[in-house]
Length: 287
Image (cartoon, rainbow, N blue to C red):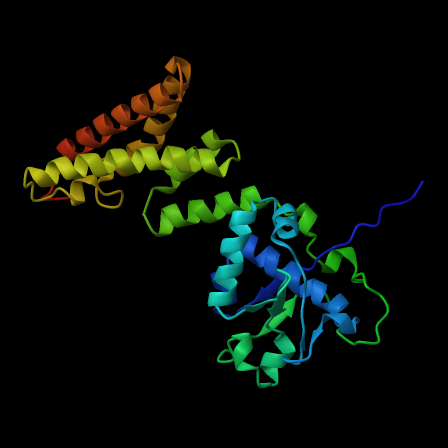
């Protein structure tokens, strides 16, 4: 019986501004591309003489399978990496795409990069990987990363769904000022499914916007404050409990998804209307 060798791909960590704009899926994809470069550098067939650089062949399908996403997602990810200057692509006559990731040692030495490669050379990031040593010596014979398991971040063990939910929850709290208790309740009712969490959140935000639009059309001076998470104390204190009550009721009564969505929207519109009516514009406190 042949023993299957499990290869670990180190997830690059960096304080570089461009790299940190990548989503977790994009970071995993970039790390996989960079990791494969070590094999390319041992094969002259993967050296582009015109650019004077080694390249990587990694299909969108492979990266999609690795990151458990779609080819369309990977296409957007590759484009984003190129726009940030972390990656360049050279298309060949046979349709194969040569990928040229920006190397940490190149940027540290301020090596001139061929303009045609469209690589950003304006940043000097402090790159590091969570394994002790990456050897890009052409004479190295070992094609599998030999770093110990404790020193690498195995991609196969990355729970992308959990990380995406964590990032989405952080955005709801930091960008939209949604109460933390409400965000945790949404996480609980999503059961680890980021798409479900986004659907619930969208319904809540639509209901809130609907109430704001109505109040604004009636020229209510405090239309915005009375419907904001951060300024209406009633919303802050009661949203989490309302999410629980509404979603449980909807699940028990819903005949289909359309009915479910209508019930949730109607319930949250009523909730935000009630909170807006109780809002005290003078003291901005409970009355």
